[in-house]
Length: 232
Image (cartoon, rainbow, N blue to C red; front, side, top):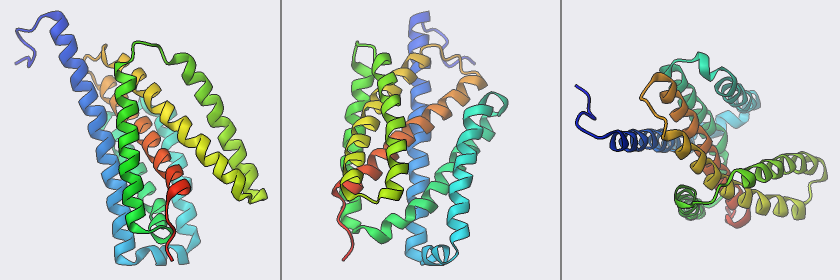
């Protein structure tokens, strides 16, 4: 039986759009929970120290993260919803492994404080992206250009090891990913209006969740670099 039976065309379209967005944020929150849960377990169990003692494992996870993201970006149309979901879970799990080192470098209270700030910023910008009537397409182009600049500057700073440049990169990165949160939200909401509950839109919801997940994670990481308290 059609769950939307009895609704007008506009009401059905609105209900389908809301259903799509619920899936996007549901997948995103689940991915964050997987990353946090795995990171917490590795630290609590002490397995993080064994992993760091074998650098190949750590760098292998980073390479696998890149492979999974590229696969989702270029092979999404050929994947089933189940495979796409598995890729997102795998990526968030790998992120949990690689980011577990944060727990060794920063004070736990500092991590939770920055996480709360990140959640607040993300929510505010996501709501802005959803509610604003202005198109963020032009802003999105500039934000992506700035993102490329951040990546180049980060690579350069690997060799320079400048704390001042690192601070500037982190500050700019927070601004860029905060802006991308609003841009990605608006873009995903625009797509949600065409949801027909097909497998294609199921995969788009997962990819949208990945985009928002990456925005959230990057805001968190760069805020932690700026304001996180290191362990004594």
